[in-house]
Length: 136
Image 1 (tube, rainbow, N blue to C red):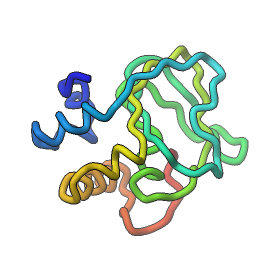
Image 2 (cartoon, one colour):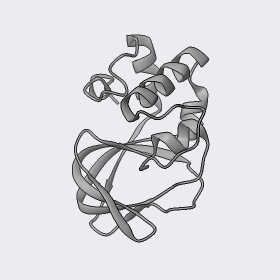
Image 3 (tube, rainbow, N blue to C red):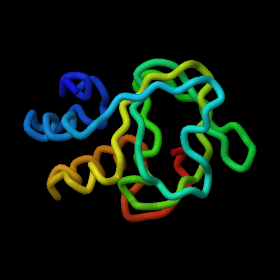
Image 4 (cartoon, one colour):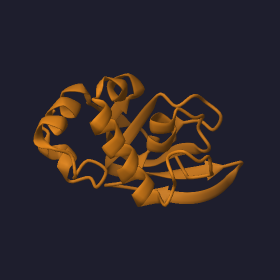
């Protein structure tokens, strides 16, 4: 995957070119149909998705809590903090997304991982070391 595709997303915008190249080499692209449950509440967090096209709803305990679309990322809190999913993410418009699994995240250097965690914490107002309900 071309690293420039990642730079347009805030979570990756502060990474160095070498870090971006390494992450892009590990990422994959996937398409999902309407109705697909991308992640299920209570499941282990094994991947994060960067939405490039389409949209989804985030549903926690049967209640709609958010809608996401192009440029949004889902699953990053669970993957970076190694927690279970705190919500379902259901595709509402045909979706094209960049998928990065926890295995790829584990391959990143400690400084790169620390950068990603800090960016997510700043973006969500969620401290990386404290549990809390943040839509994933």
